[in-house]
Length: 425
Ligand SMILES: Cc1cc2nc3c(=O)[nH]c(=O)nc-3n(C[C@H](O)[C@H](O)[C@H](O)COP(=O)(O)OP(=O)(O)OC[C@H]3O[C@@H](n4cnc5c(N)ncnc54)[C@H](O)[C@@H]3O)c2cc1C
Image (cartoon, rainbow, N blue to C red; front, side, top):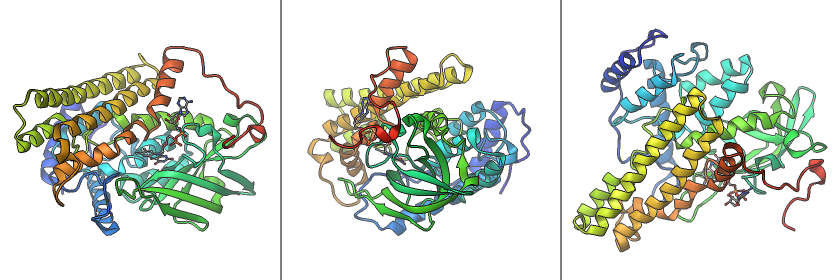
C-alpha cells in the first residue's frame, strides 16, 4: 500500500487532492451500495453480526486512511493526524466520492468526541485517546440525552460524586447511537446540585464495557435497534478521565453542541462525501425510481425530482458558505445552527416528496427491493432528521437568540438545581 504520510505541512490543496485521488484509486474499495447506512433502518431481516461486519469494515477502512496518511487531516501530527487545514480535508472529501469509507463511525467518534477532546482534553488525554480513534481502534459514543429530556442538556440528572481520585456515576442516558458496538463514550454528569443548573456539570470519558454500566437496545417503529439506553450504577471513572474543569462542563457542552450541529456538514474532522451511500431521497435516486415506475415523464414527478435536487443543492451550498464564514470569523460558531436547521427540514421534505412519487409502491415492497424499502423506511423515520444532533426547534432558538440578538427565552429554573422542580407536574 502506498503512503503519503510524508506530506509536507504546506502542501498546496490541489497537490494534496491529486495525491489523494491517486491513493484512493489504488487503495480504497469502490462505494458498496448494499453496505452503506444501517442506522435507523429495519434490522428485522438481518442479524447483529451483519452490522458488526460493517463496523469491522469501517474500522479497517479507517485504519487504511490512517496508514495512507489521510486520517485526521486537520489534527496535529503529535496526535496521529496530518496537521493540514480544513481546505485539505474538504478536498479529500470531494475526492472520496465513489469510494467506500467509514461513514458510520464519523459521528460520534470524530464529532463531537474527538473535536471536544482536542479543545478541552489534557495533553495526556489527547495522546491516549486520539491515535486509537484515528486508527479505527476506538469508536466513541455520546452519553448526553436522558430519559427526562435531551434538549435541556443542562438539566442532566446523571450524577457523578467524587471519591478521592475517582468519580462514582449513577443515572441513565438514552438515545445513544451505536453504544452497543462502541468502545468509549463522552458523558455529561451533574457534580454539584447546590448551584444554578449550568454551573454544576462536568464531562467525563469512560469505557463502555465497565462494571455497573448496562446497555439496553431500543427498538424503533421501523424495526431499527441501533439506539441504546444505558443504566449507570456506581460506575467508577478515574479523575484522569475528567474532561475540562470540575463544574465547568457547560463550557465544554457549548462546544460539544456546536460540533454536534456540524453533523449537517462542514466539520473539519469528518471524512465523508457528505451523503450516505444510499441516500434514497436525492434527485438522481428519485429519477431512477420514477424511471422504474414508468412515471418519469409525469409533470408532477418531474416537479418532485426537481424540488428534491434543488433542496440538496441549496443545502450543500448553505453548508459550504456557513462553514467558510465561520472559519473566517464572518459568522460566529453558533451559525452552524442554520445548516443544521435547513438540513433537518429539507430531509423531512425530501422524505415526503419521495413517498408522494412512489405512492403505494413506497409503503409495500418485496424483500430485497432496497430502492422502495429506502423510501418507505426513510419516511417512517423522517422526523429523526429534525431531532438527532439537537432538534430543529433548538436550532431556531440558537439562531433567534445568538445570531439575531432576540430576547432570551424566559427561564424558571435558576437558583440551586436541587430546588428546581423536575419531572411532570
Ligand atoms: C438520529 C438520532 C440520533 C441521536 N443520537 C444521540 C446520541 O448519540 N447521544 C445522545 O445523547 N442523544 C442522541 N439523540 C437524542 C437527541 O439528542 C434528543 O432526542 C434531542 O436532543 C431531543 O431530546 P428529547 O428527545 O428528550 O426531546 P425533548 O428535549 O423532551 O423535547 C421535546 C420537544 O420539545 C421541543 N423543545 C424542548 N425544549 C424546547 C425549547 N426550549 N424551545 C423550543 N422547543 C423545545 C423539542 O425541540 C422537541 O420537539 C439522537 C436522536 C436522534 C433522532
